[in-house]
Length: 156
Image 1 (cartoon, rainbow, N blue to C red):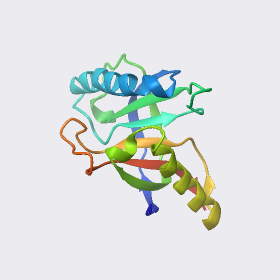
Image 2 (cartoon, rainbow, N blue to C red; image 1 turned 60 degrees about the horizontal axis):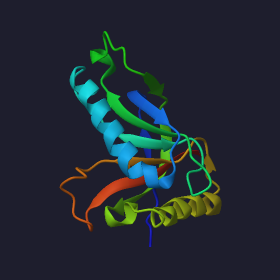
Image 3 (cartoon, one colour; image 1 turned 120 degrees about the vertical axis):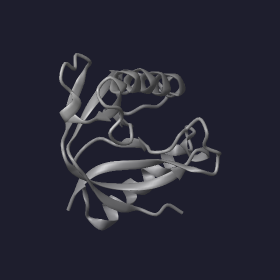
């Protein structure tokens, strides 16, 4: 059902906002944090690549992350930047693309499981935490539209 692909991701300077969150809090935290970071990015040349959300820990009914929202900006335009930021290292990712309808929890977990199963079957080693890369306009997307990649940094 899920097609797994790989891609190389260049090093990125990202604005970041991180907190602990349960699944029911993500629908509010992710868009609100993204909106705040996009506003900051506007003062530094705008958003340079698709925003993404990194899950540094398990998020489910019993666990609350932490969860980090990241908005890439152009490092050449970062002079005077005072907001929280970090450099996301260049890496290779294994990923699958999902629709807006598939982003809903707990359905989204099957996409994570598919990428993890592919990594195990292919002998590919996970080198970083799972993430959701939001490449489409969420507000205008229809339920059947592709909006997000479920990705893991990998090697091998």
